[in-house]
Length: 99
Picture (cartoon, one colour):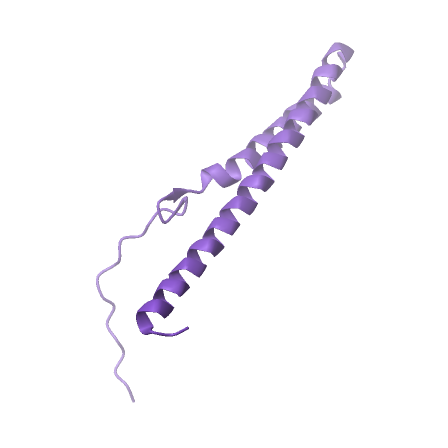
């Protein structure tokens, strides 16, 4: 029977909003802004003042733009991470003398 291992000193934990040195807020921030704009637009549509309804529809358009920007950011980030992994694998294969 193996002796239980002792835990070492706690490792410094990186904040979850950082991946490497990249601030993840740039990826998810536009989606948060889109959600807030939708909530504000819904609030204006519920209001009895019909003059505000046109502003609400404009906010829906802005929310759609923010959402699409968030999609582009997420796809770009995923492609960049995949490309970095491929470059790392290529470098390791070169160092190990593999094809």
